[in-house]
Length: 98
Image 1 (cartoon, rainbow, N blue to C red):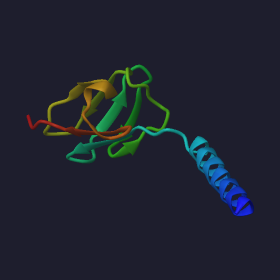
Image 2 (cartoon, rainbow, N blue to C red):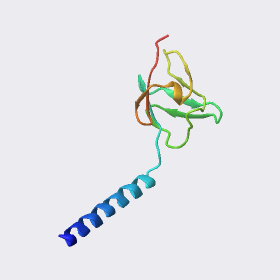
Image 3 (cartoon, rainbow, N blue to C red):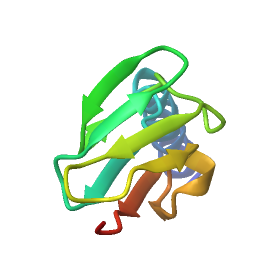
Image 4 (cartoon, rainbow, N blue to C red):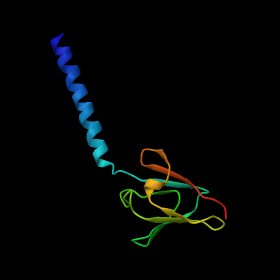
């Protein structure tokens, strides 16, 4: 019985180690999508542009100023903090028609 318990604990410890290690290999993401898709996301300070949906990875902090625009829609200005979250580090913005 003690041997079975020791083997079980060893297996559980190995699983936990592998899961923790895997999550450290995957960088955090900041996924931004818009409705409608295909908007231009501009990181103002760095003058970098992306097309939505976009995974910014570690490119942007929650406080970095950005603009999101699309023809026929009002330009949105703000930070990731201002965009509603749809999941952990995933953001969804609905653009307003002009």
